[in-house]
Amino acid sequence: MDVRKLLIVGRVILAAAGVLWPWLSRVGLGRLAGDIAIQRQNFSFYFPVITCLAISVVLTLLFWLFRK
Image 1 (cartoon, rainbow, N blue to C red):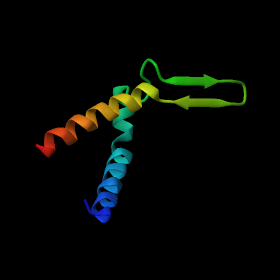
Image 2: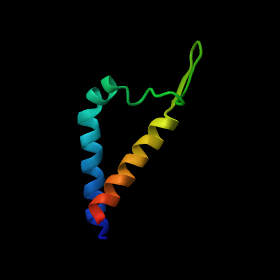
Image 3: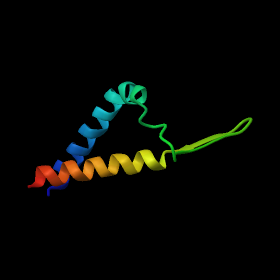
């Protein structure tokens, strides 16, 4: 695959995620059970482990289906 096409597709996916983010946050994506959230007095850390895994599985299935 051409690197230019890959970069264009990546930018389109990031733009779509940015546009859809308010809707996705209402659905609950981003605060799933298993995501790591640490909040202290002057520090907060959030790492969406399960959200990343769920997105990875969905994208893998989509790419697999469209490749066939």
